[in-house]
Length: 254
Ligand code: OAD
Image 1: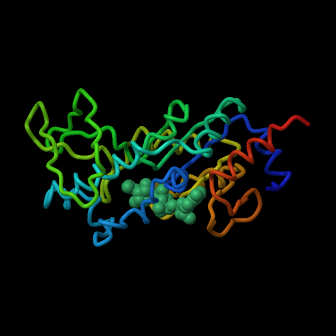
Image 2: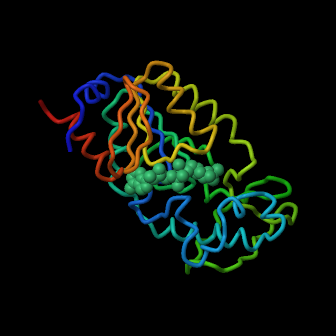
Image 3: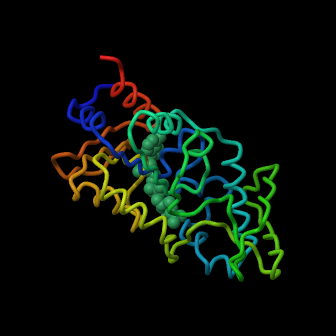
């Protein structure tokens, strides 16, 4: 894989690098991207119709069952070379901020610290009524619960149903995480956007904020979108191939 020398120089010179990831970074771990995951036993459902508070209110076991299936898929998955390369990059640059739209924990399991989750985390459910989080982690479903309805556990405090700890359509993103992400985008010299379709706002604005503030931006995606012009690069590749190659090429002994 060959890289533009201006891109490699920008990465070598950067004091603050932001890595912004979406579902594509976990695709090579076998986790279907958000828009692909309504397949198999779930294919008759539409994502937007499951990932909402209204859907949960109308049919808690249907929505909880879908998220339990996703949780079991994540639990059986392993971090891939892209997650590992991001963790390794953090040791090579003065400062790295990792912002993800993913609700899995593969960045953490690859060794990344201080991951900002803009869309919440599967492993942190909370009560639909009183918002409290359970004290212990929930057991992982033994068998993938694909297509099965599962009754959500009751909250130990108020008896309300637990809901997935993710941001649903129509809900606000966690304000501290969002502020942190936008500040990092304004501050960085290089932002690497990996495996995101860039269609879900406000997260999709983050690379644009960095570019407008003068940063170099690199998009890694097998189907990258249009570029703005100068300081905007794209690698039409999978994350698992491109990221280790990029880190290797940037920091290879010269
Ligand atoms: P999407 O499923 O919208 O997009 C995944 C992107 O990854 C696509 O652009 C693919 O081309 C790309 N892709 C696929 N395989 C890849 C690979 N191996 N390497 C690199 N890229 C690859 O996922 P997101 O952009 O993360 O929000 O979606 C954003 C948000 O939409 C999700 O967080 C979710 C959903 O609504 C909420 O749940 C709030």
